[in-house]
Every structure is written in C-alpha cells, then in structure tokens.
Image 1 (cartoon, helix red, strand yellow):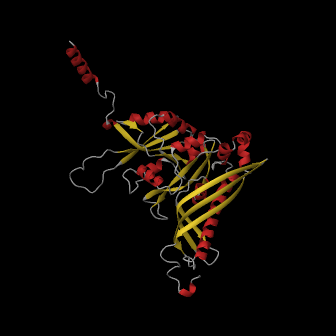
Image 2 (cartoon, helix red, strand yellow):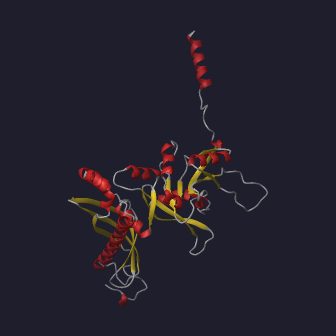
Image 3 (cartoon, helix red, strand yellow):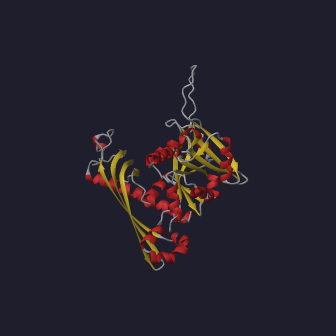
Length: 389
C-alpha cells in the first residue's frame, strides 16, 4: 500500500512542478536605456532604447547592417501613463532589469525630478547600479538615438565610460543615499552630444561633461571640467586622473598622470565660526613636460610638484566658491561630516545649515608625490644650453 502511495506522490510532484508562471525570454523587450523629457504644457515624455534581438543575416546580399536597437517614445500626464502607452505599442513585455542608464533632459531637471525618483523607489526590478545623468543643452531622448561606433547598443557605451571613472559617475543608489542623508545635497553626472571632430555637427557621439548640482531635487547649475575635478578631490572620489600646471620658472606646462589620491577632512567649530581643514594627497608620474626644466633633477622635480599642488588647490577653491556663493547648496557634504563627527553640534546647525554653509571657512593643503618622470629629464627638442638645471 505504501508503495502505491509513494508512486502517487512522486507522480504528483512530476506533474505539478515547473515554472508555470515564468516569462520566456522571447516575450521580453530588453530596455537598454531610458530618457525623461517634458513638454511645453508640463507632460512627461518617456523614451526607451530597446535592443533588437539578433537575427540570422538575410540572404540576397546587400551591404547594410541590421539595426541593433530602436527608440520608442510616449507622452503622459504621469510617468506611469506614458509607460502604459509604450507597453501598448510593444508586442513584448517591457523589461527594465538590464537597463544601463537613465537620462534626464535639462528642462525637466530644472523643474524637478522627484516624480522620477518616486517611480524607482517602488519598482522592485530596478537595478540600483543603473547610472543616472543629466543631458546638458538638449532633450534626453536625443542621446538614445545616437549610434555610438564602439558598442552595438549605445547605452552600453555609457556604462563603459562611467566605469573608467574619468569624470563623475552617479548611480540610482548613490542619488538615493545622498537624498536621504543628513548634511548633503545630491548631484549627478552630466552628458551631452558632440561631433566626432571639433566643429562637425554630423556623426555625433556623446561625452561626459561635468557635474549637475541639485537643491530640493531641482537642477540649480553645472560644474565644468576643472570644477568637477575639484569636486572629485573634495568629496574623496578622485582615485585617478590627470593634472596640468603652468610653471612660474620658464614658459610651458607640465602634465601628471595621477595613479591614486586620498582626502582627509576635519571640521572645527568654535562658537559661530565653522572651519574645515582639507588635506589632499596623491602620487603619479609625469606624462608631459613643455618647460625648459630638467625634471630629472630633484630640485626641479620639486618645482613641478609645487606647481601641481597649486593647480589642485585652485581647482578645489574654485569648486567650493561656486557651490557656496553661487549655488548656495552643500553638495560636497560638509554638513554630513559634522553630522558624523560632531552630532551634538549638528543638531544645533541643522535647521540653519543652508545659510551657515555659505560662511564656512576652508583651508587646503595638497601634497603630491611624483614617482616617475619618464625616460628623459628635459624636452628632447631643446639644446643643452637651453635646458634649466
């Protein structure tokens, strides 16, 4: 009797097991990138860059390559309404779990992005490692249509570019953490379309273009390339990069490849006065010398290091001046440092921090160590008598 019972139970397992509610891959439309824009009357424009499944090459010859992606757009009073309209146009379920990047148009960013963020706080399948960026000087959906030459689907190029960390890289997770943290306002990376060559409008690609500063989820302004480098230093995000400096002794510039960098920041509060001491350290190698100095000599190498240190100090001071005096928003996290290290003082300062931040005094010390100057100490084109030793 037990034997028949076991056989019956085993039969039941075989006939009822399996992924009865699974979705086949052929039923999914993989979204590689998403763009948000806004119409003149305040409605949302939602656009998706969707990868086209690989197909067998068509017969009959022909040199044209099949498209690897296409872009769909829809307008809605809400983001959910726009998404629903896009779904009605698709024969497959729109699938967001493999999305690489989210673009936000500049006009929408200035109006506010809290509605966009609210969508992603409720979407369980959203990847928090998805990059989110502001498109400077145009509509976000225009970047979804750019055919980047190195990648089959252009959104993957953004993933690779951000991975190089040549400029600011911010994910959804980063933005959510900054938005919910004490003493810091969120920021995003910036991207914009450019030509393959200077002055050429055709054959557009895109480039990373600085930092977008937000206050109350609204875009208040941008930091340019140099200011973004200063921002990376002061927020301890500078891990590698390049530094250029002009030397006082002799005409010309020197360039340095930064291999690693560190930042130490110390808040000091005395009565109503708040001061931050910032110590920056880094090391790297010389990659360009357009001066008459023989940088193979220790005394000249130290001149180069000092010039580099002054260059970094200026970058940081320019950045702080812009966010403190012009944008008046603590994107660098000074308030967060007080919250972490001096919680009692932060309770007093918290409500008036927007005003106090503008008055914070900052002192900066920079120490750079050049660990290599290349194979030649002085520029090869100079004669012996022209070289400063």
